Image 1: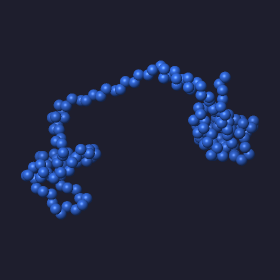
Image 2: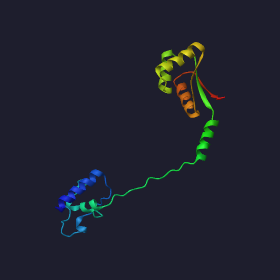
Image 3: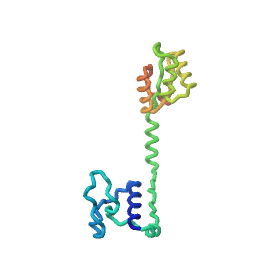
Image 4: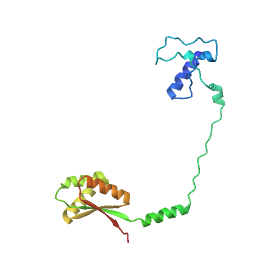
Length: 171
């Protein structure tokens, strides 16, 4: 019974990836178990009768009687001062406008597809922006925070579109 239990526990520990196993010859703990065979080659698994655990495993009755452990979740208190400072900083940072300029190099379908893929515009919206730039010379793609505007600006420039990025006052 104990050999079967040891084999089952070893297989369970290997499947679960438990690193608490320590492979030690059983002869170090009990003289009744024979020594491992000397003909075992490198990489071949040891017989399970020669494997013991460094710490004794709890029995099923011990596991059933154990109380569940409860960890309290951390409490996070927000202060209104931090909220005010982030709102003030956001209000002071200017929005940036990305503008698309008409050019004779790129096809209209390509420009509309770039606006849809890079800026996440719908097909209709990207087509309207492209047509506005085609007819009037310039079309506004949108107003964004600096980081997002810079990302769109660089990506559209890499695609070969003529775009610029200007700060906008919300006055």
